[in-house]
Image (tube, rainbow, N blue to C red; front, side, top):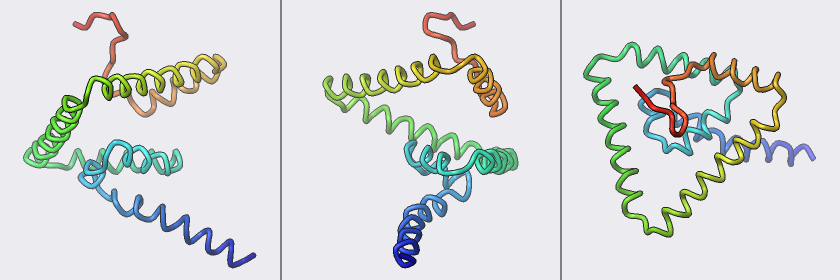
Length: 144
């Protein structure tokens, strides 16, 4: 029994260590795919996520203009890569991807609508504490 517990801990650690080791800095975190970044952050407790965001913000604030430009260039290259991947998809693949996105949004909306007013307010406050990077207009809302 003790062996089984130790071995299961060892197996779990085998899966978690690569994620923890891969993203030690902002540049390392940016090198991960969206799914890997999401898994990395979701594997942390809320306190660890908050601390990690603080570390990353401090690292970003300490960058020289040249380093920031290099980071932007990597981001732009990643965006171009994603755009090329999208454009290389067939119409059926694009439609499947759109359906996947739509399904994800529907689940989020369903989860939100199932919340009590208190839970919604708590979610709004948590989102506010994380800090919204920018206002995203609703569909059909005009931007200035």
